[in-house]
Length: 166
Image (cartoon, rainbow, N blue to C red; front, side):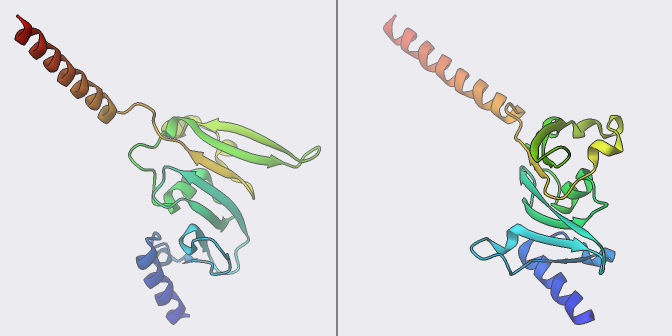
């Protein structure tokens, strides 16, 4: 068991998986997915725990398919994935869920993770097969600086042309 735990910690260092093994959780990569990157599948649970599979896409450090304990919520999933990237839009996190009540249909809703204190626990809970998508903020401070810099460069070029023609 200790050898397996040390191997998992070594794998987590190589593949950039958060070191949840040190917190008493077993973490690893599933080699059973053919044709897929091994680093795209994460298994995080305690031995003997009932798990579910969910997908996490978008602007997180380690997007992919996660096999997690059934008690995991969206905030914990994003934490297991290494957290959101700086440009992640946590205000409109999309959840796509297959609703099995009354037939099988897809349900999509958004959650604002910027205000976790205002979200009820039921909305944060995950269900097997959920797909979570964290989009990118469309307009950031860096893009504003880029626009201002470009506008200033154009203004200087126009002023130079006007000055030369006088």
